[in-house]
Structure formats: structure tokens, C-alpha cells
Amino acid sequence: MSAALAKRIAASLSAPVSPDVREFAEHLARKADAVAVLFYGSNLRTGSLEGVLDYYVLTDGRPERGIWPRVSYHERDLAGVTLRAKVATMTLARFREAAEGTLLDTTIWARFVQPSALVHARSGETETQVVDAVGAACRTAARLAVALGPPEGTAETYWQTLFEETYRAEFRIETASRAKSIIEVNAGHFDGLLPLALDAAGIDFERNGKRLSPHMAQGERLRVLRWWRKRKRMGKPLNLARLVRAASTFEGAARYGAWKVERHSGVPVKLTPWREKHPVLAAPGVLFSVWRERRRRMRHR
Image (cartoon, rainbow, N blue to C red):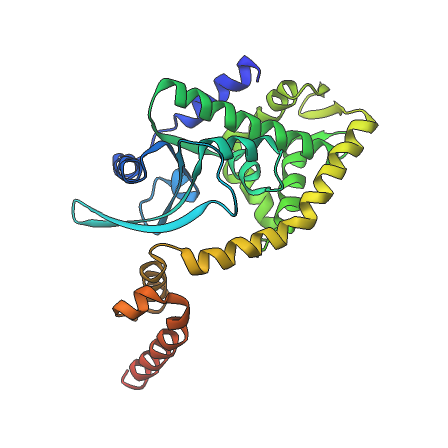
């Protein structure tokens, strides 16, 4: 990775976050014996502690096999306020492989070319490893953006083309406007990032004002597009497998679901031991109880 891209990523990962966000990250790191914790999502941009905070917890060891990451839900009371977090856990080694684009996975490099903050690192060496992995994600994303995009265009055009394509490869409800909004709300993050990523990926380009003309050889473009077609075909099946796995192994799924239902319906959900143990089987009964309670409230207004 070029020194310029590494410097840019290190500065981005040092984004200021709430002390409560950092304390929660330290708690998660201790619990998982993690080497690093990344914080991302809309709460990073807004600074809000409402809703669900998003973390990636990275552990030591060899790349795990099977379907990853493990997903869990956590709550933590800080100064009388309940913070909630959805946590994805995987090894740093697997995270790096996924960021480099050597795996079928598309979620890591597409996610971490977007803003994130390194809120826990065990050592300076670990911090360097995370910077390198995020740099790999930027290079992977930039290479595909150019292969998919027009011969000439603004950086925003290339990034939007990339996100529209990766959204289509997964089970997502986002429309093209969502891909555009990612660029708009994170304009400072993406400003100047594509030229640095292209340079680090060894892709020459010409610049004319805000417009770029990348020089990707036709053979290389075809290779990248073949690489992408394979991952695009596997995107939805892999995403579905992860959803099925999460439905049966999601630690804290019942508490997470109860909180979501109460937040959107206003109806508290009582968690019994059986509901905690079997959240999927319990879901129809819970939803029926919520529907019945809402009808009762409507009649007594």
C-alpha cells in the first residue's frame, strides 16, 4: 500500500467518537479477547447513541472456516443510559483476506471502503495491520469501480456505480438512491480517496478537474469483471446462508428482537426463558400478542 493511502486511512480510522462508544468497545474487546474493534454505521457519522451501535470485533488466530462472522447483540448501561450494539466477530486474518478480495465475500471490502473508526487496538502493530486491511478494501473496491464504470467520470460516479452493483448482489432493500446517499452524506470521507486507491492499486489515470480517466487495460478489465461475476452469482446464496445461521446462532437475538418490536410498536415484550432460548419459534406468538395489545389500546382510546 502506498504511504499516502496508509496515512489517509490511519487519519480516517482515528475519527473522534463518544467516550461511551469507546468504553463499550473496550468491554467487547475484553469479553472476546479481541485484538481490535472497529465502529461504523450512521452513529459514527452523527455521533448519536440512539438505536443500535455497529461494531466489528477482530480476534487473533488463523482464519476461521465455515460461515463468518458470528453475530451477537449486547446491551450495556452507562450512567443510567442503556446502549445497544450489534456485533460481528471474526479473526483479523480472515478480515484481511476478505478485504483483499481473495474470497467470495463482498461485504467486507464494500463495507470498509466506507467510514469506520478503530476504537480499540491491542498494540501499534495491530493498528498497522488494521490500516493495511482497510487499505486492501479500498484497493479492491476501487479496482472494481473502475472496471464497472465509464471510461471517464467523476469519483462520485465510480463510487455510486460500485455501491449500486454490490447492493444488487446481496439481499438488500436499498435502492439506487441509497447508493447515492452514501456518497453524499460521507462526502468528506470519499473526497480524494479514489485517486489514492487507484495509485495504490497500480492503476494509472489522468485527471481533468474533477473528472478522472483511469487507464485499465482491456485484459485486466475483463479479468476483474470475471472475478466480480463469480462473486455476484454467489452473493445472494452466501448472504442467505449467513441469515439462516444468524437466525439460529445469533447470541442475544431474543433481546434484540424484543427491543426492536417495542421500539416500533410501543408494546413491551416479556422475555421468558423459552423465548430467550427459541427466538425464531417464539416470534409468531410474540407478534400476535403485540398485535392484540395494539388493538386493545386502539379500542380504549
